[in-house]
Length: 207
Image 1 (tube, rainbow, N blue to C red):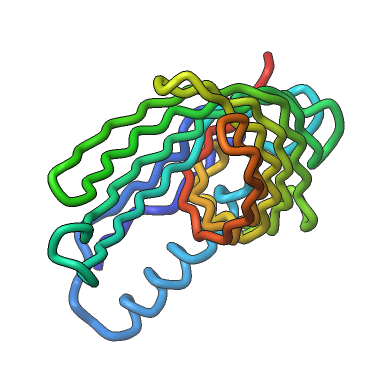
Image 2: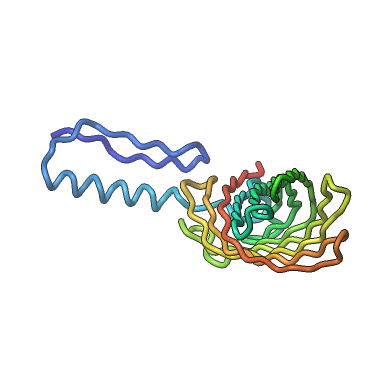
């Protein structure tokens, strides 16, 4: 019976996993699964320590249909993408800039309107669990000023929280529940929304 050993290299190089040909015996399957679990546990910790960089972002999509009236019924489709760049000034604590790009297509009856927007502002982020965890919990807050193609602007405050799942020491997928409050300069109306977000983040070690 031939099999390869599991090698974990701790010199910041990408982790390597090698396999030999395995016979299909039940004991060997169990050993392989245990080795693979230990391998993932060993390498899937994030770089949340002081001096590292954080890049990534999240995106959300929304669509709405209104069919109450044949003439006034309409639809709305919107896309929001929010890239971020941050720096860990302390373990598990990062701050930086968050940008925003949005596109909204509105149709009411025979009237169509397209609005694009861009925004920027500071953010702060904190991770609650140990830096060695494969799964962590984050809290994120941001304040942004947005400018739109229809000559109006918005000020938004965002508060997010949720888990992040790490594929390896550098890449993680986050899912967040978000609270957003914004005020519109054109209408002087303030509003609050809740939404779910999915984001990808990459941690870059500062050598």
